Length: 83
Image 1 (cartoon, rainbow, N blue to C red):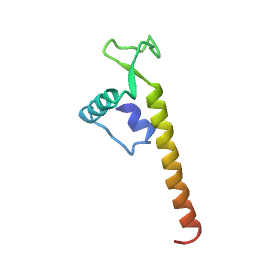
Image 2 (cartoon, rainbow, N blue to C red):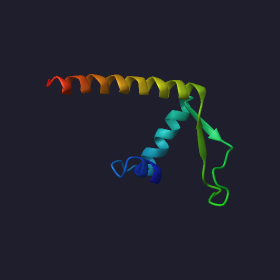
Image 3 (cartoon, helix red, strand yellow):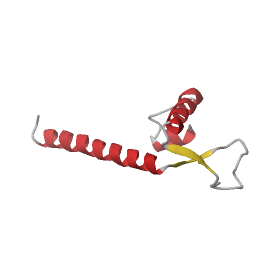
Image 4 (cartoon, helix red, strand yellow):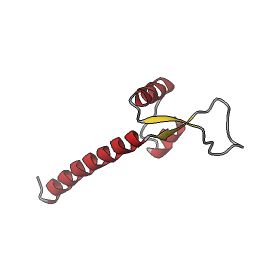
């Protein structure tokens, strides 16, 4: 939750219900899975769960990024031509 807020520069605040509900749906879709890797054992908490993208998740992310880039390109084009 803190990372979402930090990544969005405070524009998005997410509660635990929203976060864990979303994570569950993303896991069910096969886009992420739990990871055995620990980022920093000194800061680790036994309750903390780490996740990683699956290959399907990476493909989905790349497709979404491509879609967003297309939308931004159209918006930039319209802005440039005053529409």
